[in-house]
Image 1: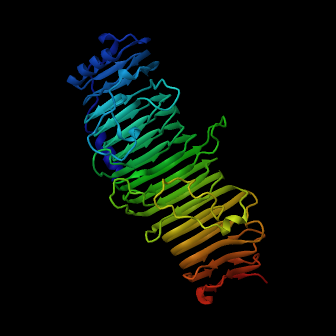
Image 2 (image 1 turned 60 degrees about the vertical axis):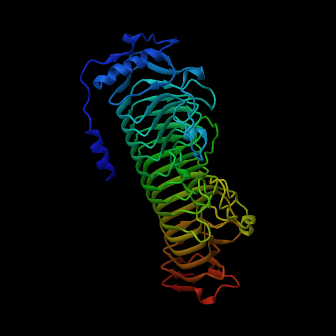
Image 3 (image 1 turned 135 degrees about the horizontal axis):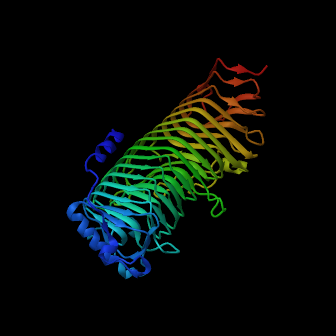
Length: 515
């Protein structure tokens, strides 16, 4: 359905074959000093009459806000740079919407921008030229801001030095972004907010904040979902969160695909450990469902995976949780992880239907046994971030308040000795863990810790050499735990059962035992 919508949108308007509207013919100088706003806007208005192409030839064009029009193509030729004026007065002022959007100005405002589109259709912005945000810190106009637009193409551009969201989309449908390079961005890379049928492909993004972050804010004055979003074949460098849903999550997120991407820190060592690789966060009453994440490689990311269902409640009189369900991760490889990956709901509102297959995480290690005695807070109403829970009691993966969790082909390792278990399941109902291989914790602790787990099955687990105990069971609610088909020949003991756990909670069958 998603691919079909893109194919359809590409057939909705044909390429214009009339002579292009050269901005120099309308008075633009391209000398890097004169302000060419009026000349470029005149070319846009002329092109709009025939659905034509605005041609920006080689040169440096300083400009304030330019208003895009339906049907035009804005083409920046090789050697052409559209430069944001240093003077903020050359841009449309921040808008006052007349309602509370419950969002920060960067998210809500679409006026203070270099290229601005409002309600336009069938617009293309294409390279191979550049857009230069012309700032050295955060705070300034967005390079591209589109609100309630349809059938948009952004191709083969380079955007440098942006002080605000590089490509900001609010309430837009049928958007195709391909071959865009973002360098030295001081804010987010690409932000589709309340958008549908969006494809982002073959982009390279260097950002000091989130690289690609979809939202469902209240910036339109009401709730609107983000649906049918595909991000594919992108390289994301030096980011806070690389691929993210939220935190603005008043509306729903449906049918999201993240695939074939690489995520890494900047090679020069600046901010060497970005926060999270994939962050799925709903905390304002919206739901996240039908998300597929596959073929992702991460290097030097603090937390490879962060899933969070919370109850912050922006725009709600009484904060209420939404849902986070039907999410699939497959073929994920992460090295140098400094923080534990986590999947967390809140009491009474579990994250549901989560599948992890072919996940390989190598953590930095160094964790102590003190984390095992720590009571991990709920933080139901806090801003969600992978750093919010500090040291978690697992070195690889921590899952709490989850229902119907499926894990298959999981490989967890550490570079330095770590006293924590590889995997902790806490208040999990219906857990199926298959073919898990993990290095044992330092100090002889359990490889796995199941706390208040109901209906859990461990199959084909391969404990690393030196494992003392495969699994520890705690919590009075723990029940119906099955160990079957596991190789326990190198394990000193299969399980420890703490006081308060029903001794019949654990059943073992068809395991290879130590002799």
